[in-house]
Length: 219
Image 1 (cartoon, rainbow, N blue to C red):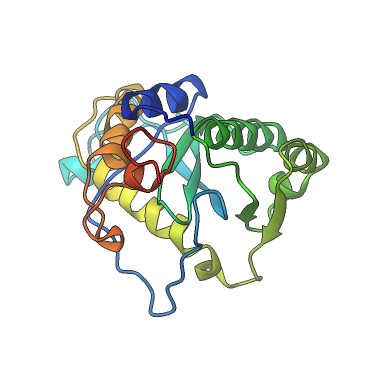
Image 2 (image 1 turned 120 degrees about the vertical axis):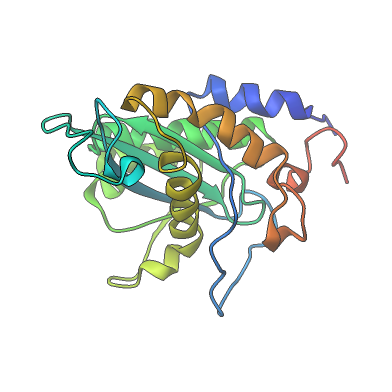
């Protein structure tokens, strides 16, 4: 079986235009479940994050600073592999069907290159994930698409918890001078999350250790 070195994982995700993550985990729900193999299920979600031109009140503790009316938003497309917890993030200027299709294609290609082609993708019922463009991406990668139950966001709980971690440990963890600086800090932080950070639900291991084709993890 052809192995993939751990250093190659960062390059694969970077080449795909994606990023990855870390943090102290939010608690797992009582009805926790886990698919048996990498690629069995990929959880996908979106988080809107305000752009800014100066540090805001979350870090300055005053609303007199960091006011950036009209700065707009970044849209964080997030994908989490159910079994390994490997995470990927794409920063987009909108949440249109084209942006969603682009992220889905990049994430699915990255998983394929890591030796874990995705069998199922789980999203909410948003139009960007159910559009003709998105359906074409699922078909191209021979991936089935499932949607969460209405008004039951915990169905996609792994993505939700990852977003909590993302906000707490990256977006709001430092005093960034502007949104571009914040975004530049994403990739190295996510690399640490996937390749080094101990994960409570993985018995203290990092997500990368659950990828069978990563060199040193072959079975």
